[in-house]
Length: 325
Image 1: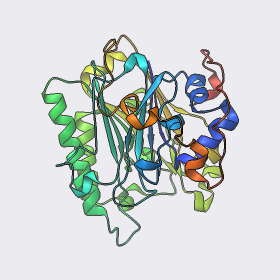
Image 2: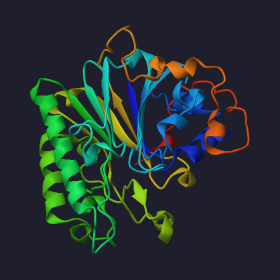
Image 3: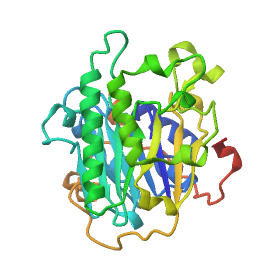
C-alpha cells in the first residue's frame, strides 16, 4: 500500500492544479497509486464550505479537521481508498476536545486495523526573536507524543505523518541555516523524545543523505538554490518497520506548494475488510445526498462553475522521475 503525505498550502489552488494536470483529485491519486493521502494546511474556510465533489471522491472516503479558531487557517484531511476504510476515526483529539490544541484542525486520526494513522499539522512557533507560539507548539508536541504512546502501549502499531515543523538534526537543514537558532531547547528536547520512540522512516532509509529537503522559503526564492529544511515526516512504531518498503521525497511541480510530498510504501498488511463506514466518514455525511449541493469551484468563487473534468486513467507504473534522491 502507498501513503502520500503532503502539506498542500491551501486546498483551492491544489484542486485547480489537480484538475489541470490529472483531470481532478481522483486522477492525481490514481496517477500516484495512492491508498491513503494525508494532506495538511487545507485552509478550508469552514466545514460548511465542504462540497460533495471534494468530500466524496469515487472509491475514497475522506476525514476532515477544520480550524474552529480562524477561517481559512490550518486544516488536515485523510483520503482513504475503500479497501483501507478505517474502523474508527477522530479529529482534533490530543486534549479534551475543546482545548486550544484541539481547535485548529491539526489532527486527523484513522484506525485501519493493523495500524493507527495520525495525520499532523504541527504549529509554527512564530517569527524570532519573540516566537509567540512557542509554548503552544511545545504543548502540542508533548500531547501528540503522549497520544501516540497511549496507542502504542495499548498494543497498537502507530504511524505519525505530516508537517511536524521541526528539523530532526543539522543534517536536515541547509548549511546556510542553523538548526540551533531555529528552535528552543525545549522544542528540541520534545522532538528528540518523540524520535526515540517512533522511527523517522525516511532518515532510516537515507542515513547519510544531505541536501534533501521538504520545505523552502518562498519569500527568498530558496527553492531555486535548494536552501531548505526537512520538516515533513513519516514516523512509526517499531512493529511497523518490517512492513516498510520505501519512503521517498516526491517530485511535484514546485509552484503547487512550498512543500514537497512524501510517498511511503508498505507491504504485507491486510485492510480491515468490508464494514460500514465509521461516523466521521464522508460516506456518512447526510448533506451530500442533496443533489443541489454546490461544486468545488463555488466553494472558492462567487461565480458558478462546473466541477473539474473527468479523472485520468490509473497509471500503475512508477516512474523514476517521480522520486528525488
